[in-house]
Image (cartoon, rainbow, N blue to C red):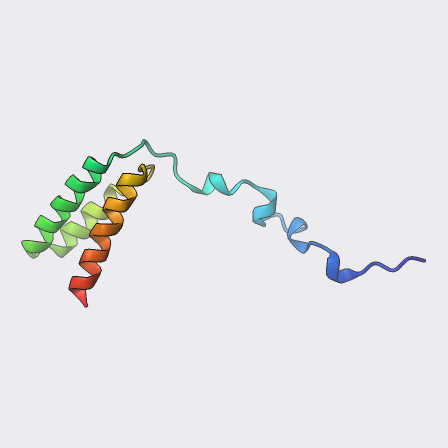
Length: 90
């Protein structure tokens, strides 16, 4: 009788909730494309709210309209904005 090496069994294939059994792309929301200018205007609105002392409004504005589906320039713009604000908060 041939022995089965249990170390070579891919147990993820047996788990129904494993990413191997469904497409991970379905976890991302379907969002319209966002341009870099839209991200820049959103970041300037958030900066204005933060300068005015309305941190709750700034957080709400950032969470209500996240820039999903952005092109490469939009992602760079958002990353620059976030890194600027992280450096200021420290």
